[in-house]
Image 1 (cartoon, rainbow, N blue to C red):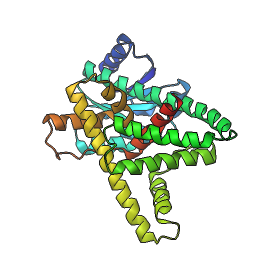
Image 2: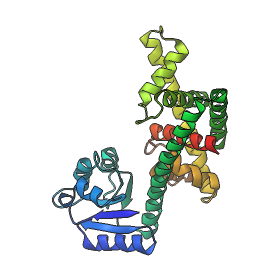
Image 3: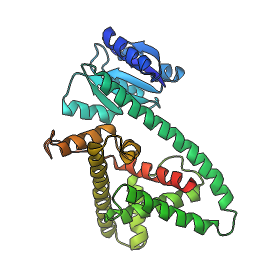
Image 4: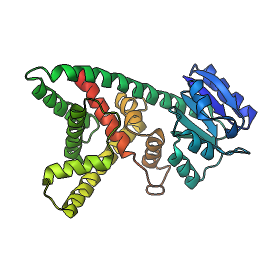
Length: 308
C-alpha cells in the first residue's frame, strides 16, 4: 500500500511513517505539513492508496482539505486528531473520511485501523475482479438454454446461506433482503454491468411497486417502502449485534474476522462491542449503520459464493 501523511507536527509524521514501515504495511510516498500543500492531482500522481491527515492545521484544516480532495481522490482517508468532540468527528465522517484515530498516537490502534482499511481496499478490488468474472459468465449463460433458472436458484440459495451465517435468517427483514438481492441481480442482468450501485430509495421503491403493483397509489407505496426499510434496518442491526457478540467472545472467530469488516465500518463494530461490554452505556450515542454498505457487501459476497 502507498501512504501519504499530512500533519503539521513533524514528530507525528515520523512516528506514523515508522509504524507503517516497521510493520510492513506499505510505503510512505509523501508528506506535507498543511492541507494547502496537497491536492488530488498530487495524490493521484503518486498513486496514493491511503491518506492520513491531521484535523487541526494552521492554514487549511483536515476537514476543508478532505472536502476538496474527496470528489476526485479515490483512496481511503484516515483522520488523526486529539479532539474527541462527537459533533466534529461526525462532521468529519460526513465529509468523506473512512476512519478516525485519536492522538496521542497509539501504535496498536494505528496498525489495527490501517489493516482494516487495507482489508476494505483488497475487498473492493476483489469485488471488481468478481464483477468482471460474473460479466463473462453472464454473457455465456444468457446464450445457454436452462442456465437462467439455475442461476436464479443459486442466487436464492446463496442469499439464504449468507443470511444464516450472519444469524438473521429468521428476521422479518431477511425476506426483504432476499428480494433486494434478486432486484440487484435482475438489474445487473438487464444492464449487463452496473456502473454505479442503485440508490437505496430506488431499490426499495422498485420492490414496493413490484409487490403492490404499478397501479398502487403513492401513499401505499411510501408506506410499504418505509416498512420494508425498517425491517431491513432491524435485521442489519441484529447482524451487527451478533458479530459484535462473537468478537467479544473470540476476537479471532472466523465469522467475526471475515464478516465484521466487510459489512460494517470498524468504528461501528467497536462502538457496539463497547456497548455490549458495558463500557459505553446503551443509548448514550446512537450507533449509525451504513445500510448501503451492508447491502452492497451482501450482494458482492453472494456473487462470490455463487462462483464457488
